[in-house]
Image 1 (tube, one colour):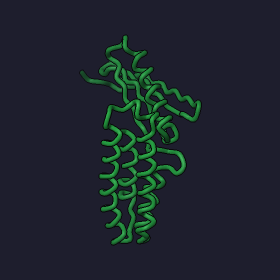
Image 2 (cartoon, rainbow, N blue to C red; image 1 turned 60 degrees about the horizontal axis):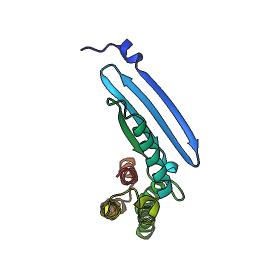
Image 3 (spheres, helix red, strand yellow; image 1 turned 90 degrees about the vertical axis):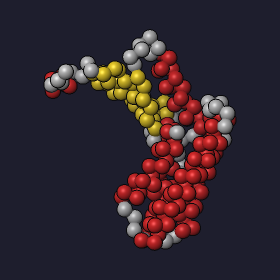
Amino acid sequence: PQLDHSDRRRRESSLASDSHEGTRRHTINMSHPLRNTWKVHKFGGTSVASAALLRRASSIVSAQLSASDDDPGRRACVVVSAMGGRPKATDLLLGAVSAAADRDADGAEECLAAVYEKHRCCLEDPELAELLPEGRAASLLAGVARDLNDVRDVLRTVGIMMWKSERVSALVAGYGELWNAA
């Protein structure tokens, strides 16, 4: 079937934002005559900055999914940013790129070590351990360590070339979001 622009304008869309107890989330409801209904939850870095906040985000999504059990056509999508807090994972990763471009290998390594420690503390926190199957936290942390080795390879190239590009910065910073989504 052909879809004209008037059908597209009739699409239902609502955006709700709520902020409480340090958690901010955005929920978008979208439906279209040719698609099932989607519930999209977007959690920014501040909302996923610690094990307790990740647990809270999980509770919000679980409650929404339970509430929609009577609607078999409803689909859910969860989008998370890299871990916020002090320091933010993205800032650390971008700091590593800048340090590498300045040929400051020690500074780059300090940033990467801080990123690893931030994720280690979160994954080993009992608040989060209750949500994960046995061995999952260790597996996730091992994945972060492997990825950080890949980032180190990229940073070596940045250091040799003494050049940081937006693409390299985006690639390295993107790991923070991937780790939080895992």
